[in-house]
Amino acid sequence: MPSTASRPTSAPPRNAPSGLVPTTRQPPRKARLRAHLRRAAPALLAYAAVRLTVLLAVALWAHRQHHGLWPILATQWDANWYLGIAAHGYTHHLGTAYDANNLAFFPLYPLLVKAVAMLTPGTRATTGLVIAVASSFLAAWGVFAVGGLLHGRRVGVLLTVLWAALPVGLVEWMGYTESLFTAFAAWALYAVLTGRWLWAGSLAALSGLTRPTGIAVAAAVSVAALLSLRRAFSGRALAAAALAPAGWLAYVGWVGLRLGRWDGYFAVQQLWHNEWDGGVETLRRLREVLAYDSTPELFLVMVTVTLLASVALYVLSAWDRQPLPLLVFTGVLLLIVLGSGGVYFPRARFLLPGFPLLLPPALYLARASRRFRTLALTAAVLGSVYCSAYMVLVWPSAP
Image (cartoon, rainbow, N blue to C red):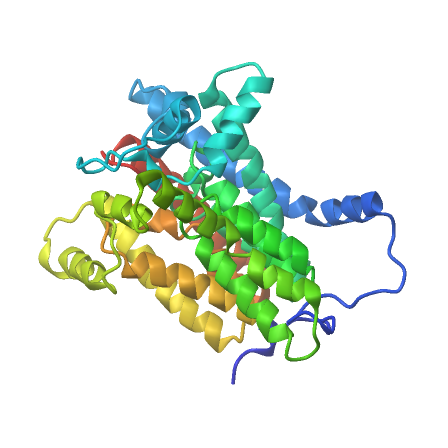
């Protein structure tokens, strides 16, 4: 039988799939915000401790190799593309060169970098890194909020620590979009679980302007909103279902208009070798790493283990009867990542926002002994330290 410990601990509102019991009297908004922040404080402090531990270890390793840490975090790989968009905008042409068209990168993060940099001192690279770090704390708060809502404070804290200690967790403090996207995704899911439909739809739309996988957040919000209409009609739920995919559709449509062809965005993705092939390329690379390559790259082994573990965790999440919005979000995310025919090595990073997949181990650790829990979390953090340092200092390609 599925574990009952994984089910919400309180009855949901009438118009939400699961969540908190509504009260007749609500305290002032600022007081509620302070109360939520106080409740999340242990999770945020633990998150900061993990991130600083990893950052310090990577800084020491980089110093021994005579590398500067700031350029690694703020200006390399995808960060450089986003900074270029913030400085010069998007191209007007499709072109024929592979891996060279910046229309593949969604616009919200570089627009934020450009806007904030105009109002603050410092370079755009510094601004981008500050936005990513600040977003990571909003994301960690959202991860805790979802875990705490469903299973209590302890599970929420453990879920946040596990998310921080993922092998590619250092990306959360790099000039990338994963932190911003996870913040939108986590709070959109929290809004769904608590019946805040307009918030859910708006955050899903913003996620769709941040990363291509924003369509996974949109699917979760729209499916939950439409299913809620079976119980009782709600104009807000209907509006959320329509609003959720608007950001993703707007950018894909804008790229089509800019390039003068309806499939413009997908043509750009083809130039980045990123087509959906139903998982053929993924299976080929899995076989190559696990069976045919006698000396596989350590980073590729980590990516392979992450993909396999994510599939196993999704099965456990379904068995544990997670709320449908979480299952839809992680299911669509996995479908996109595993079904892509594009490059293999960034796929662990692409799954970084899929924090609900970590709920089964968080629940297990919450029930385990304190000694086992301490050993498991210590091992996870040490693994994140090594993998993060290897990712940015040894591995020659993008995370």
